[in-house]
Length: 150
Image (cartoon, rainbow, N blue to C red):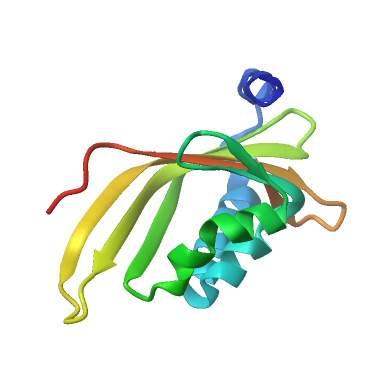
C-alpha cells in the first residue's frame, strides 16, 4: 500500500519539462542495453540496493538478492530475449525521483533460432537520482498485454 501511495505522489508531483527527463530516459535505455549485453548482471546493475521488482504474483521482491533469485533462471536460458524502450519519463519537482514507462517484448527462441513465442506488454519503473547524478531503479513492474502470440 505504501508503494502505491508513493507512485500516486510521484505522478501528482511531476511537472518538470520533458527536456529535464533526458538523463532519466538515457538511464533506462542504458539499463536495457546493459541487460541485453550482460543479461542478469546488467539487470541487477540498475537496481538500488533496496530496489524492488514485482513478481508474477504481483508481490514485491526487495533487494538485489531477491531480484537475482527471481531472474537467474530466466537470464540463464539463452533462448530468452528481453527488449524494452521507454516512451514516457516524468520527474518529481525536486528532481531526485522519477518514473519511466514503455513497451517491453519477451521472445523465446527455439534451438534452430525460430521464434517459439513472443509476449509484449507495458512496464512502469520508479527511479531515484544519486548524489553523483546517476539513476538507480527503486521499483520495476510490468504486465503483458495479452496471451503470448504463437
